[in-house]
Length: 410
Ligand SMILES: Nc1nc2c(ncn2[C@@H]2O[C@H](COP(=O)(O)OP(=O)(O)OP(=O)(O)O)[C@@H](O)[C@H]2O)c(=O)[nH]1
Ligand SMILES: [Mg+2]
Image 1 (cartoon, rainbow, N blue to C red):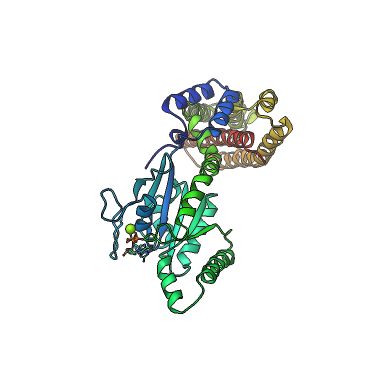
Image 2 (image 1 turned 90 degrees about the horizontal axis):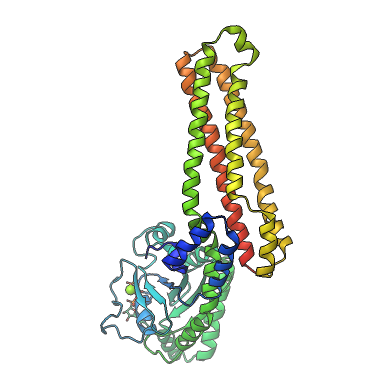
């Protein structure tokens, strides 16, 4: 199921076009095209993970959703022995582009939950159906928490409810009261672990027209557009990152070049300086000269990055009328992003400069010119490269936040 986030929503042609627009600095058109797409997600494939403990009835549930019996061709294997060890996708033909994924039981490998989730590639699924049987389990609560932490949604299914109906019947209990009690119990269990209770369905995969299976199908059909829209919104930062990828790669090369240049100048300078007459060295101490060139080069690199990536206020103004969002909100978002990053950047710069100063001064007397020169090269490279790389990342993060703010309604 490995798929880039961009290709999940856009065709290869559309993706190339977006990357081209971004390369030319036309962020406005990129945002407008993304907005268009967010209103038209019918072609997006939705991957629904069906999860739960071993034997809870996941595969039988998938077959019931697809109107298949266990021995039909193409049905998910079921049984009392553990049957599923690799996630397997099954098309859900009632809704276009929806796949139901049969996952191994959460307790099947004897791993703790985080390791299990990694193994089944948990983050790649868009929506979840937790299948439980007989009673609420700790694993269900933990799983629900992990899903909500990702900002995603799920349904909770109490399967094999025909068994519950039989036991309630034997006790002479009222079935409707029994169902109300089970629902209440599920809700309070979710609340007790801090999870917002989801839609709850009590189903039997055998008695398919009874209980909540038909309701679950209708609810899923009704919820589909909002589930897709939520996934699109959650994916905006990744989409922006993938759209910006070609330009990011090109700029990374430039950043490396600035770093190498700073390193080369740093090395040469130290090498030349230590061979100069003492009187000259006193007038401009080596560390000072070294800072001047390293910071000078870093500054040139920084201005270059700003020119390539900085978002202009003019763009916010023209964008705001097209997306019906006040430009003040977009400006606030950008300023908030920038100001939260300026202070750490300035602090890092000063720390970096002071560190290099101390080290160069410290080693000057004790090391050979060649060692000093190598040190000068490495420290100048590290300083310029790290600083430029960080500001490139920060500019990308600002762009991601701005696009998110432009495309979401608060
Ligand atoms: N009575 C009843 N039995 C069910 C229902 N759903 C599943 N079962 C039975 O429960 C057993 C396990 O069902 P599966 O669907 O294979 O369970 P699973 O969660 O896929 O199991 P693993 O893949 O091994 O984790 C089988 O014997 C099914 O026939 C149901 O709604 N009612
Ligand atoms: Mg199974």
